Image 1 (cartoon, helix red, strand yellow):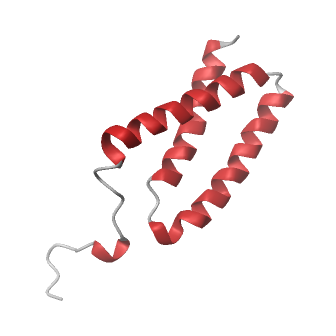
Image 2: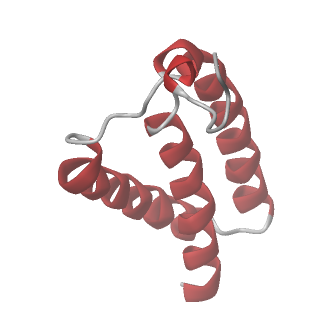
Length: 92
């Protein structure tokens, strides 16, 4: 098993899952759609390069890491809404 490829795939898949997890609720469906397309592209790349085992291990590791992040941080700090953003120096 190639450790370098596993780490890179874990990073890529983890960032995709993290983007879904931290997306605002109104945009979560759109972000999920694009993340699933990108996940399929990474799966096809892994199958093309004969990295099937590395891809599965990276997927499990990314799921575990994102769940761990959600338990420690994400549950208590939900993503905000874009309506809550205030620009400093504006008089409105």
